[in-house]
Image (tube, rainbow, N blue to C red; front, top):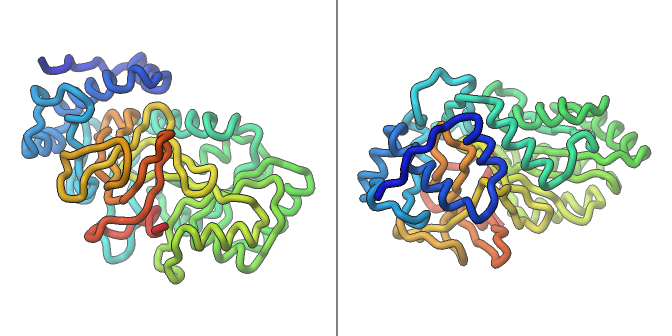
Length: 333
């Protein structure tokens, strides 16, 4: 019997962010039912692969929409005028994805709660963004996230830097002298440029790379990037963020490229030769369930190859052969 459609209200949104592991499957099935009913593109895809609601009785039955659909279609659940349109960075040779956002507050709630889960109150931190290529655009979900973190931190030295590396160097030294907890979040090529010119000994700063070489430098593996940055900054590990334009939630790595999700987000794997063959262990191509992405599609088949560990953490090990380069995922292990 098909799952009953949920009433998407403020109470439902609250349930997403208070979700316990035992309730994930039921909420995922209800989300599938809602999005099948209100998202025409997703419904067409589900029917095409033989997974209409009457054949979806467990989360393993839910079909995952190939991420490339965001390049060619408006992937929305319902009829609304978007409050914002996020666009992927990509490269000059690629068609960028576009994500229609019904409610910016829903996105902000998702990333603020996830940040608190992994890093504690944002007011404890000075937030510094080194995101030059993203700041030069006005439709980046990463900039919206970083900007809100800067505002919510309330620290007088929180802010963004384009290419003012010398100013950033002196700011970080001043923060270190005060033993201020600091998050330096940066696009990979900018962090490498800054670290190469201004080595530092950071004892109170978390360095977080968001991926993205953007054709600015020779491609490095993630391990090469992290080895260079730890050496130049004197930090034990480099943190990372796994997010994308098409989602409203992020996973975080506290080091060694091992990511963990907030409770309303899960990672699964599919076989390279069969998109409907799914697994929650081993290696494969990453599927993401993001229950916060209720007004778009919560079930996304990415082009990232990955590996899931026994404790639920996951690694991103590369890209599928025919996928486009993405601004936040241009590196391999």
